[in-house]
Length: 206
Image 1 (cartoon, rainbow, N blue to C red):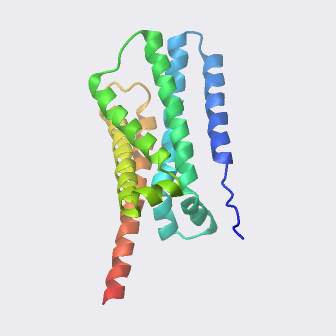
Image 2: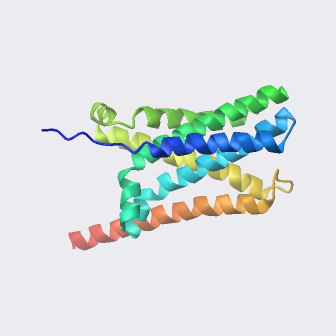
Image 3: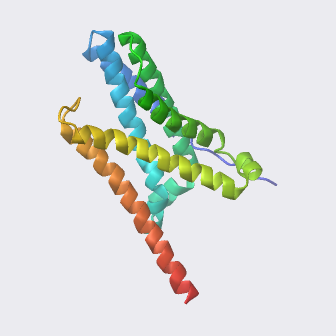
């Protein structure tokens, strides 16, 4: 008899609740539509970034600091990743709302760079299932998701490092220092986990 797998749904509801609270808070704090949309855009970006950092570092955390929590994060990485996709597409809706409100068009480089991230996110979300793994093959599937997470990481870091280096950032620099630090820390964890795996392989082969 086949036992049905149960999938955690709470990350998706948590994302929807968080975005709803961001929208409510923005409406309460500001009167002008451009300010409302800008606030929603900023905080939905930070929400999706925090989820992404967890997804990006979950495998490394489980390898370096094995525990029930880190093993749960690695085991449910697919669903955490899908909740990130949900959060970031809601962020895209906020971006569109902002530019429609201010009647401007984003710069071409932002459309190309950010658009590429959304293409990868959509591709990873649509293939985050066992059927896609079988059809694409584990190697192709793995390469797609590996390229996707690194591209998205690079886009986030380009945004936050650029604002940190700017002489006139749109918000206090400590915000961008914090997000940049989180992104680099996640990168460090992945490198450390990779080095640990290499050492174990070398010892096993000796």
